[in-house]
Image (cartoon, rainbow, N blue to C red):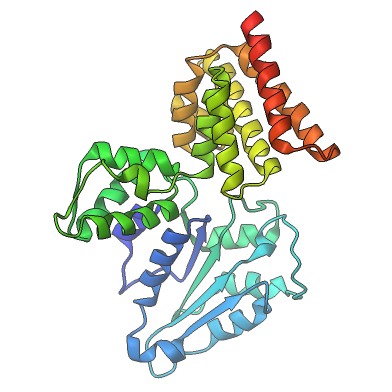
Length: 343
């Protein structure tokens, strides 16, 4: 279930007993949390809402709370945050969790308790017994993979709910600049609401100034400049990313990811994969697939492969030498442009 479906179907009078919210979208996480809090009358919230961070306290504490009867009310709400034990990731947390407590609870959830597990991770370890138990018992809400159309609908809805008007083309620009990241979108919308508070009509003229562009979109622009052999503009954008505080290794890692994605999309497209099947097979946000298809049509396989291998070499240089990162990037760019020019 995605967020919009959850929002439409969530029943305050008859909620499920267990929910799993998977994904790292701060805005949506906060919206969903507020919806669950509405389950408990305001005067009862202090006594009947418990929030537990699994990197700081044992899951047994949360389960003990979930088993308790409501205090002068009809329902308890227990929220579990950062359940790292559902993933294969390592953590610095030294909390010792008895996961059998959670697994046993999930078999027979307390009727008067709503247990909500917020897992801010892209993937969970489906092989783990505890993960299987949670997914079996819970209503799962996935906020990782909202489609482009879903994000656009949500943006338009947020704008309307705040009493403003916006054209679809402006929504498209906002979504593109932010790579459909709702946290970035909301930060931008707050500025746009303030700027257009008199007219209540959001226009395209200041979107580029007020809506921050995502790291991924900046690097996507950089990829296109590299492939188009626009050396000066590529160096200027790379320099601006460094000024904004982005780490050279992180920039290069995202560049490598983008080139790899373009190669994968190009190869799979030749084998008949559609835009939807590409997103599913590569486990990539549909919006990124759409952009990759647009760029991939402009360039050939050899150029993409050469750029990808050059960036792998650049990563090695960044890790093994003390030379200036911008200088190393310029060397890569000039070498790529020269090779491309003679191809």
